[in-house]
Image (cartoon, rainbow, N blue to C red; front, side, top):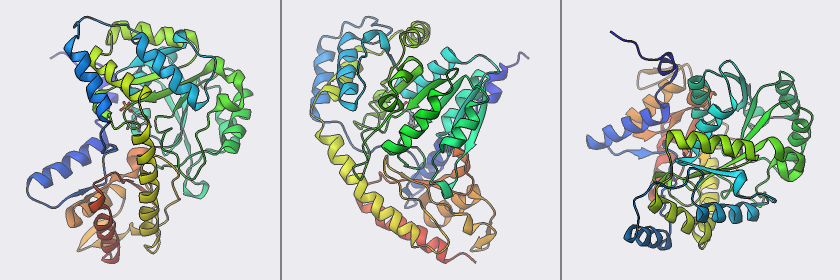
Length: 399
Ligand code: PMP
């Protein structure tokens, strides 16, 4: 019998998808399930996006498109990132992908040889570790616990970069913690980055439109423009515009990197389809009132979620300032039982919570932090309070 490639053995199915599937299965069996599991924005892009897609459909040539991305998409993305604060970029600095996930995968292939090191903070988005594993890179995971608000410190970064990793991968706002780095924190980390010229920097900042409390979105290049030569900014229409299934991600970075990713595109995907491209152009260049309104709404929900979680004795939830996640430390439950079911870790906690209360959350170990769990609070508004209440009840019933 022929064998599968070793790389497949290193790839794990997404833990987030597994819990979402279990929740779906219980729901199909008639259970009343509230899902705080999958990180979908749960709103729709405006009518202008659908109109642009329909218009493109009416004259879609059905031909292959550009490996880098259609000119109209690159133009729209340039305007979009200029508004964020990225200046001096042209088409040669850009490339496209089937979502930010595929852009990140392409970047891993473009920047990492087998055995190379990639450093990133934990808690991390699950896929970072999986991508590193698939390309055979060594992940140097930098633990950032709740005591430091799940944020990387300059001294941690300095120590990690002293090992000369090939890539430092950064995520702000964070999935899974919802933490956002302030202007000052970004500037302090940028100082450290400037001292270590041998490392590529990827900033996966796809939640940049969802920043609360007036903190604003900041990037290392805003603080240290010389980092532009080795920094790649990754963005996506998925979360900002409520378009996760449309699958459009983009990058802005050095020409050599954009060209490498474009070459990989020519071998992996050829192009993003024309109808999808038209929808992404409309989203990026059309009215921004939907993302703005959602940001306000998510900030209000954040308050509800954090208050409910911190009201549970022994649970601590650092206050997120962006995205749509909360990441409470629930380790106080470990060693206890719920209705006779023993809970010794986060995975057992999430399984028991789903079984007993019908609330689906993702175990923190999926993100490299087994003391916590992730709550994605984009559910229909009427489910938020009941879901939180069920979590409170679950804790109250622990013995
Ligand atoms: N980066 C982060 C931090 C994410 O949370 C996600 C999606 N969950 C992605 C990248 C991938 O997004 P996309 O839908 O554009 O592939």
